[in-house]
Length: 66
Image (cartoon, rainbow, N blue to C red; front, top):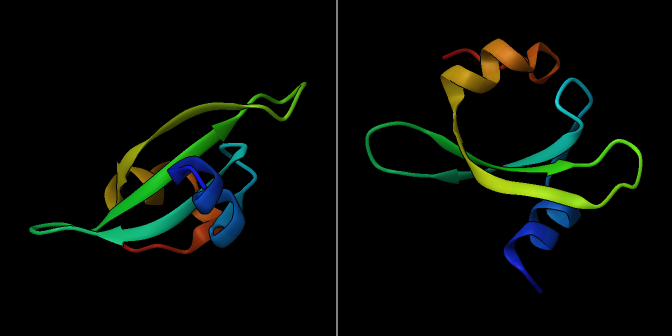
């Protein structure tokens, strides 16, 4: 299973960003893996790390506090 598919299967959907996130940890600051999806096709478009600060700003539905 690819990393992106793991995030989709085990992660949480974020409607504001049309993608999934999952906590991956990290030293110094908390990081989340983010998988973005194409709104028309549902295909995976991106996989990268996001900081808790960025997610708190862009995805208030997660209720994260940086």
